[in-house]
Length: 510
Image (cartoon, rainbow, N blue to C red; front, side, top):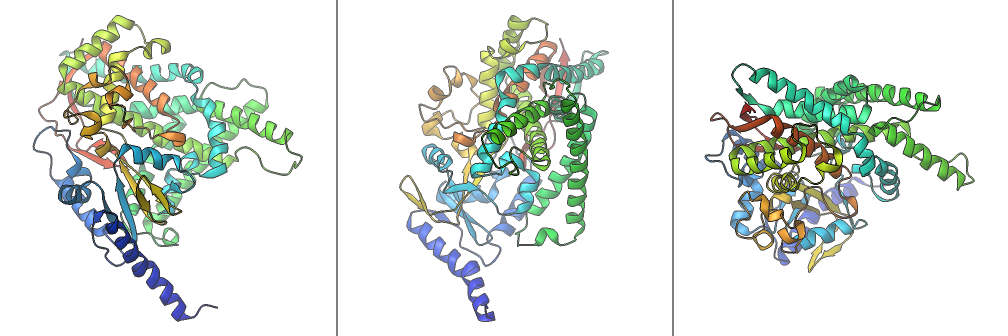
């Protein structure tokens, strides 16, 4: 039995002695950072500096917005260099920015894994995103077929119908004068939510919209929760915020269970498997289960995914799929509004390829200029500007010794502007840098990670790019656009990188 004295000693080790030991170790390796502060570390400074930064808009349109989205990190990088560390409670968070170290970290899946700082994050981003080891491998294998190119081709009508709906809306409001000023951000958010609803659940797209609204509210609550230090059991305290989070979780679970069970019953009754994400996922899961049972004599063992696991994967489709594409599209429209020459080149390519016809799947992959533009937008405005991992075993990255228990964070913002990889014009919008592919664009450094890298690269990359190409092509066919004088350039991170004050754009009907 532990005595009170033992508990005090253990607490002292966790909240003071171990952090100070890690601090000395990091400084010996040349890292600079903040001094550890008992219990909270830099959480309070991080939150207050971020709040203050977001109150002020940028004085000019610039792709140098790090001081707005990560003011504490920006302060450290300016004063001490980009290899630095801050404190998330009693845990050091080390910034890694060299592309070769980031690639190495992503391949060390045993030593370096997903962060488990706050269980609430796994509730928001469940499924294959948060799993590790054998469970991750099993789910990835089951989900993979849904994102094969031939399956994505079958989802093209969902992309087309959702895009057409927004295009028709814009045409109606420009019919009288030929042009209109509009904040396109809400419409692009709705567009990508519609695509996910249709592509994931087919005809149940109205039900899908309800789930999206629930997820949106849950995301807002999660962000507030993540701005405070987590301690075990905190999410079970019956605060108004925790109660609301659980209510939303229950409503989503009920809605998704109903959709999934209805679909499973239809398949079991002999209906053909639908070519949407849910249909492909259930079909793949069924085949995996049958194969596993056939290869194993233990008939009582559970194979494949459970209902709850299928629900979690559907939630992940929603949140990650919707946010990734909507942010890519909004920044693309903003940057093409600023760079009319590239907008004109992209439109010419689209019209040469499709005329006024609806784009077809095969031809979308041959849009070279559109692809270059999307890649350059992803470089300057990646949906996720940083990715964090926890070190579970002492490990080496290059010449660095990273201690067990530390967090490491990769800043896409920094890597995508590294002048050694991208050249002196790294802060400029120049899509033609991708004209000969990513490797040539980065001088062989492979410093381009908008969808991650290695074995855990984002499954939905092809889905997001196909949707973005379809939407952009259809916009360019019908409209030219420019930034409104009322537009305020203010990138901020709300889980993903978004325009804080919307995207006021003047649309001109062609």
